[in-house]
Length: 434
Image 1 (cartoon, rainbow, N blue to C red):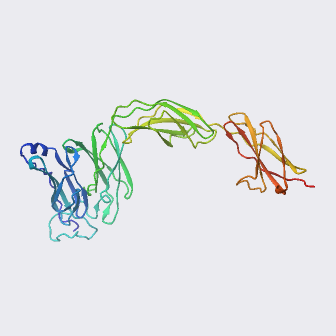
Image 2 (image 1 turned 45 degrees about the horizontal axis):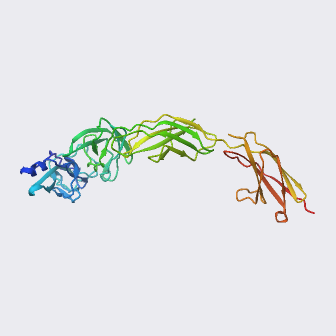
Image 3 (image 1 turned 90 degrees about the horizontal axis):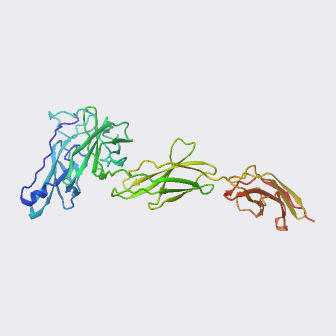
């Protein structure tokens, strides 16, 4: 028999009713108010006073051990137990609050979990392995709007565990007196084990802190241990987006954005992000963080001669985002094309290099040409010499010294005011010597 006892118990809270201390005790709480754990598993408990974590807390536990940070480890005997947090209030009154714990035995097939084989208590409804989350992970919570969050969690199939059939996400609102009863319980199919999943929780209130837990359940209801609490998340009124966004090409690989910052009085820091996509893309993908107090930004590392559409969002410190701003579109400048028909003709101690201008001058008229000279056909490194030529030139005379005797190789590059085009195919010649 895999489990010998499966019991439940209700939340127990005891308050010292002693004058002013009793009033303070009413704001003393432990969360979660109850937990169902496999023997040997772990859970975290939090004690709060007026909604804030209490530093001077004394923890006691039955059925397991608990350290002074509220980290509880269940023992190896199933049953109904509790953890209790206490502190000394005004006038030396002692405030206590407790959370009820139900512990059951879980093990592999054929395991009796170390419990008494003669017990007449029933097994967990599913039999087999326990359903669990790995090491009581902390759910990751990402705000989506002023009323919703997405909770990420991971299921586990470690030895002794099966992936749960469903996952229950519990939201607790944080009030002056500590954690309220569950604000909402949200469940979904768990999916495959050893994988991350997410659940969107809606219907929350803005300006209200929440914490979240995750717990797995099997087909018959066998529960896992409860995860750690997530860090508190407060949802704020959704910020407005930047307005009057305009986009201008700045170079062959950059554009400049200009916008007007929104006015936001939601009581939390605000920053901005730019998102953009090529005109042919299905949606926005790359994002660029922007300095909070800026009203313009240069976006680099773009492709030449490419049309991009940009939009901006406002982002709060807790990651809540605004809707998109208006969109702006710009096309990066285009450099000239490649010169053609490059020729190298030998002369007396010289070589004449000639070419035809590129078919396209790009986004502006040609300003000049560069002729690169090298003693090898490999132009991947530094050039031996570079010779400029005017925009209307079609050739240049290159004098060759004795130091450059032998075959010389040449490539030609066109330039406009926005950038430099690619080099042409090389041409070669050997200067004539007496």
